[in-house]
Amino acid sequence: MRLLEYQAKQLFSNQGISTPRGILCRSLEEIEREFPKFPDGAVLKAQVPSGKRGKGGGIKIVSTKDEALDFADFLFGANICGFQVDCILMEEKIALAKEYYLSVITDTESRYSGPMVLFTVHGGMDIEEMLTEHPEYLQRINVDPRYGLMDFQVRRLIKEADVPAAEQKVITSTICSLYQVYWKYDAEVAEINPLAIIEGGGVTALDGKISVDNSALFRHKDLEAPRLDTVEARAAAKGLSYVELDGDIGIISNGAGLTMATMDQLAIAGGKPANFMDTGERILRDGIEDGLQIISEQPGLRAVLINVFGGGVRCDVIAQKITEAMARRSAFSLPVVVCLQGRNHEIGHQLIRESGHPALHLVETMEEAVRAVTRLGGTA
Image (cartoon, rainbow, N blue to C red):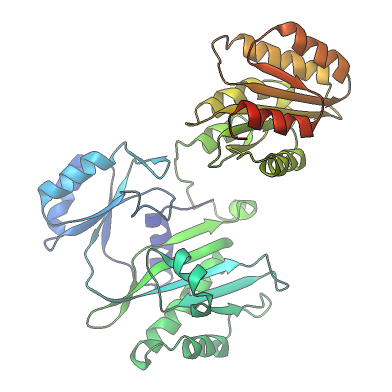
């Protein structure tokens, strides 16, 4: 579960990490009422779970109340980085001297497979691009969860990162506190970017990101899941596993393994998946109907691939679900390639052929399916 910035900063503050003074606002009336508390101007920040809000137009420094109201009027209800904005964090402006980057993540890619502290004195908005070009800038600590973060590890990291002596004490304290937040809340990621060095001394967390392991949410009933109107959230409410991607060919399949294999084969054939969608057991009920509805919302879609293996499920039942769903979409103009293999697939194929829907294209194998959908979608 990805917390919003204001939620992450509340957890930071509870652990002693400094954050800018801020007020969460859910209406223009609140913006107007609270703005006088920021006589030197404020920063308005859309509260959506994205690290690209700045580039996406969701953050602005304002100097007057009129500026604040104009920008807030734009933000409320706007779509920023794929999320609708329903609350804004209004914060004091901070005079910065430098920006650092700090995070604690769960490292699953190395042999350590445990907590890892990441730190660099080269922080800011383009941290990913910078670290791609200069990975040597990033300092790492692998933490043994049996013992926790040790003082000598932090001292070594501070030294290797070449942190100025005047900042070492407060940076050390912030690193240790962030690790406590990570550990206390079963986080997968706890990140401060940027960790700002303030003119005149001190540090503050200008931004905050915390993702909590869903398997541990039962231990954190005090954490409230953000109310987000997203395609992924609507799919989850319907019992579908869905992840939106940046391609143009929609995928509906049954089983995570088959769905991933379909995406791989599609990429090999030159196509670009628009999504990951595993219907699971919902495919026996309204999984196809709901899947087509969700996929059709994605802009730029060129074609759809339905790839089903009937192990436990019967292909004739799935074929019936496909033809019924498409019959209710007589005006559906995008090509839909169907690949059914497994139990009763011969009957299923016959049902697809007899449906006569002009958008349906039946193929025998996955290899044929990915070639057909890339061709019909105009991507190969």
